[in-house]
Amino acid sequence: MANLLQPESPRAWWPLLLTVTALFALVRAAGLFGDMWLDEIWSLLMVGQVKAPGEILTVLRHDNNHPLNSLWLMLCGPGMAGWIYRLPAWVAGSAAVLLAGLVARGHAERLQPGDFAGAKVTGLMAAVLAGGSYLLIHYSSEARGYGPLMGCALLATWALLHADGPRPVRWAIVYAVATALGLLAHVAMAEVLLAGVAWSFGLILQQREDWRRQTLWALAWHGVPVGLAVAYYFGFVRKLEIGGGPENQVLKTMGEPAAYTLGLPVSAGGLALALFALLWLVGLIAGIRRGAWAVVAWAVAGAVLAPALTLWASPSTLVFPRYFLVNVVLALPVIAQGLAWLWHTGRGGRACVLTAGGLFLVGNALPVVDLAMAGRGQYSAALRDIGRMAQAPEISISSDHDFRNGLLIDYYCGAVGAAHSLAYHSVGQTPPWGVQWVLLHRLDGQPEPPAMIADARGNRYVRERRYPHAALSGWDWYLYRNEELIVAP
Image (cartoon, rainbow, N blue to C red):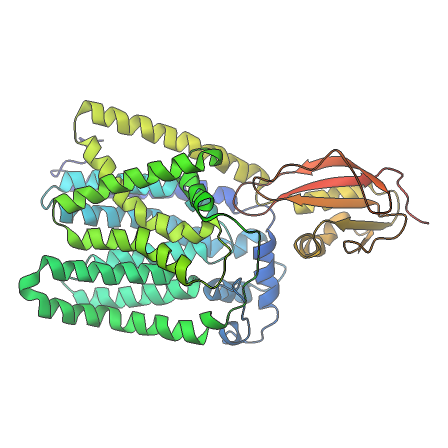
């Protein structure tokens, strides 16, 4: 690798970066197919309530409405294959691999001006980190706003690297467009905007002798994006209704994205978070030692200050691993700086990087295989099996959560087959003799239910089979059959 990245063969880097991007785009396709899960279907059903694109911002006052994604769902319309709804996330998530390499290379060139070979190594390492992370792979194939958020976050950062270079006006426009689209993709883009402001502040510190001009340029660069963010907050974000979900501990939840980024078991989330922070600090120290205060300010604001302010200011107590997605994306180019430093320490350092890289790819490959095999749940397969095993045209079914399971059952009810009709009974409102089938759901980390259950009236149900899901989105379904197979009183 080192020979390919020498300054005398500058064209070799781009084919390598594009190859890495293409390979990880194929990996991301593992999550394109399979059933859509609750939040994707929920978004699609919400969009069905509006009549014009503008109503996405004025009518759909719900935090599950990610406007850019909602606009795509509206353009596609109902009844399409799931992978079509997920295309924007896949395209933007794949582009994020390329952009991560460009951002890391740009940072490295600031840390060590003239070391083109070192900058190329750093860029490739960042692309591999972004490409191989299961966290990023997962959200690069989900019909929500997270994939476009990643792409816009890194595009805005890449544009920011050109703020003090030639043609700054052109790049300022790119920055403004990227931040605007990113905000429409997901409100977490505001954290990227905060990191961008910190970057400009760092430039002012680095160029104190020209601080007036740098300040004017910072105001010019950030004035429109910050104004749009403020208007977006008061006009849309502040009025959103929170959809709800299970309560999670903050530190435990922060360990999950770290584990799904580094390829460690989620049970070792605390260790993963500590290792992630250590790798990030190594890259940060490299920036501090070389006085690259713009890079340092951007890194601290994007990975530490922004999530801390978000958690403090958020009216919701709900915390999910995906809430830290953009912070992981901004941290990876910094981690690549530390790995590149270790790479250039000699043979021992290269051996360490190659070994860690192999473990990283293998560790992340395991959940990717789960994503390809199980997807975000096997809801249509469960209902298809119910239709196949049904002994009467009318099928009665209940579950342990009316909204979560009821929405999925309603969306995929056609899987039972045209010869059957499906009747869903709400929790606690089943007939005295029970229902034929019961579906229990279990989220990530929850223990599986027992082999036999009974309802309040003593009707017993035997577990028929389990329908697994891949981590981060969706849930397992456990199908139970009425032990007596009573279909009528």
